[in-house]
Length: 403
Image (cartoon, one colour):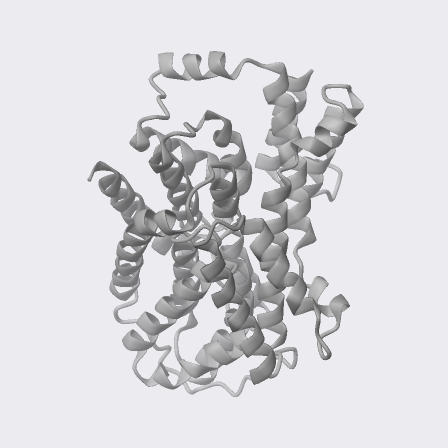
């Protein structure tokens, strides 16, 4: 029964829908978790215990910190500060990708894309520039930048917590391939759009959305101090989730920002997905012998101890199921005494997001936000850039692992 429920759940996640229903991947995962309990595979108490609370607390806390910066207008201010470079397109693209990569490494890459895209798209259209290379550069660089740290994206948070990886050592191993991949992606964009940086027409008079938050220096400063303090605490023996939830709690003690507004920006769907997948994975691990599964994979030549094999499998699964479900599926097979295996999983699952549009939520956010301003980024256009960028990143990762 557990195997059947697991397969149905992951098939639904891969398809992203159920015929005749409007349920999405999060709903499918939640139904899978409910079925694990409803059919008696695991008890209600076991389901609650299966949820890795430290990971959920870390994810939740970082969302609150990011909400502080978003409501303070920091993201909009950051995007607007680099707009004067639009007269030098190549330099602007380089600075844009560098800024989005750094911010994504310290904060949620999805939020960076959500805040940057409308500001960037409107400015590019007004200036008569071709928005495609710059918007694609934003999505790609945010994915790559987020791979460099444990707190860059949800799957890295999960890997860092479950694998009990040190914050500093994670950066030392993952940042160099991320930097090389960022440089490679910049060169790919320059080559593909070498004669297409401008549209050649008259600048548009498109106005920016009224929903852009005004920059508040004090509220933004609070968010920046919170991020700096959090990173500093990550280098201490204090558990990461304790540091994060404490700082998030301090930010909620505000005389200006309402708790409702801050919590309204928490991605409850993503948190629900995490909790549901913890239960589904626990259900299948309780009913099957993982050692037997590992032995069968090894017999087929799929040795996950081989980092090249692990990279390839992670890329495939990430583009079938999406990053987080793929990582959760592979985590039980990771060697707790081999941190480089965990680093490889983190980088491969994140780099895989650039391959196709559906590989990363950040891609979808950029495409949806740009479409609202009349900029269409097709599946084919994204793949024209994403495929070579992903291949370069993965080659860098494999090469780095051999050093």
